[in-house]
Image 1 (cartoon, helix red, strand yellow):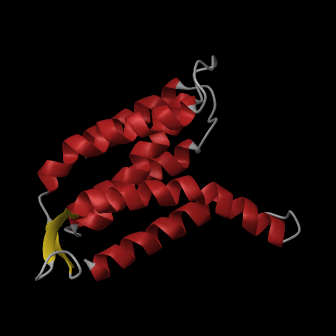
Image 2 (cartoon, rainbow, N blue to C red; image 1 turned 30 degrees about the horizontal axis):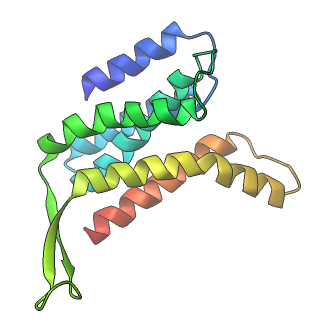
Image 3 (tube, rainbow, N blue to C red; image 1 turned 30 degrees about the vertical axis):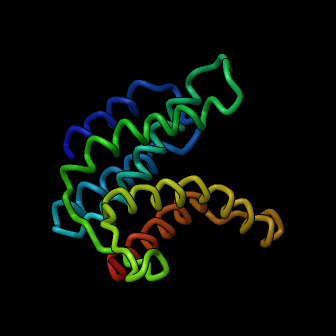
Length: 169
């Protein structure tokens, strides 16, 4: 986890300005994942913050590339960043939960789901949706934003998602 924080810090220092998710949000997601793993929290909540961190780094880096070669280039690079961070870490976390599907087969079927991978996908989805949620909240309030609204909404939604996964898996 220390190498993730160090890489994020190097990226923060090497850029002129934040063009996607802000560097504070990106470092906050990475720091929260490192702290959660250190405190012994389950793999799913750690996955939420690692997935959010990986996607944020990818979207942030994608905005640095000025030339658009492909439609959806930012999303493609975000997904590549997500995959390159989450997939190698997933086998190391090693926490699985059973998922029973009663309508498959005569007696039902049980699948093992990777808690870290589920958490990472949920975290990336929450991070991707947070700016839309912030804009929607701003529109409801008459186009008024409170200080640090985007960062607060992102952090609160990630915390809610990780708490939900911790209590349910």
